[in-house]
Amino acid sequence: MIRRVHHRGEGRGRFGPALGIFALAVLLAGLVLQLPTPALHGEGLVGILGLLTVATVLFVEFAFNPGSIRWVMVLAFGICMGSAAVATVQTGGTAVIGCYVGVGLAARRLPRLNALAVLIPTLLIVDTLILLDSENSIFVALWAGLGFAFTFMISRLARVSEEQNSRERSLIEEEKRSLAARTEAAALAERGRIAREMHDVLAHSLSALAVELEGARLLARKHRAVPELESAIERAHQHATSGLDEARAAIEALRGDDLPGPERLAALAASFASGWEVECEVEVTGKPRQLSSEARLAIYRTAQEALTNVRKHAEPKSVEMHLQYADDGTRFSVADHGNRDSPNGNGGGPLADAGAGYGVSGMRERAELLGGRLEAGPTADGYRVELWLPEADRNGAKVPA
Image (cartoon, helix red, strand yellow):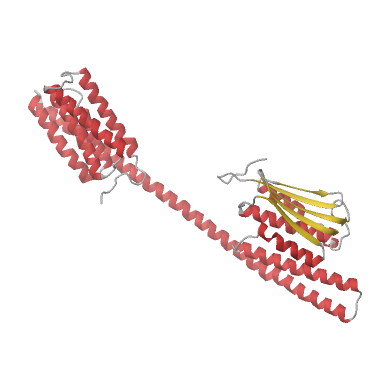
């Protein structure tokens, strides 16, 4: 298997091709500005062949992006040998810079032994050319060797530095993931604790209340109490059992079970209708779409709270729930029709003694957290609560109205 060398996000595109283009530009400038000039014979032909060698390996690098160790060695050798070929006919010129580029490229992108396999032959070839031509050959060859050594060392240090930075970035990302996992685990543990507390306190209390109310209803029937008393106890019992179901649903949500949503509106309406002997209908219009878990829960909780307020403050003839999937978002409304005690919904209904509470304000806060709004107010024959939630874009952000 051919091993790739541009791993861990290394900047092969920033270093290799850029320096290769620089070497090609140096060779081209040397051929144009120095003697011998390019030709199809003699020394000019050697210069052209060297230039074409560098251009060819760079073209393959850009066009096919091989990236393996074997290919990077070919690329580095090609730049070095092409530059050395030009240097043989343009002694004392700038072509030798291309050799430095090839060595630096090898040191930067190859393992140490492979980089040395490029450095040593290139150094031997360049020093041999210097010794065969220069008057101060030994001195110039030593300087060339020092230049290659310096280039190799700096490039290796750059490689080591980038690998170290890459490892540090990986460690930071791993630490972030670990912190997120610990935070999530702590949140789940806290949610589990709250769920246990709700189960042990609230659910048990409501369950006991339902049992006591059932006993009170049977006792009222045994002693032949007035029918209104037995009916009131029956409604209180249904209210307690409904609250128990809601508490269990909240516990399931805290434990990470499926959150309730629009699909449960029909069951909620049926439970309300049977418990209070009031007609309750659900209407859905528009093309249904997938909503976020927060939006689904907001719709369901709004329905629950609105129906609770109807039980507290009204004696309606009918209740309508309407869910509309519109282009700009989702609208959900609960409207009761019939007898409502007062416009502010805090009159003397069958459960008015339970108090107004913070239901509407809680629904409004939940809607605003999702970028929506909630409106509540009297109508000609009752009361209406309307929730609007904006449609989310592809990135999950809310699209304003």
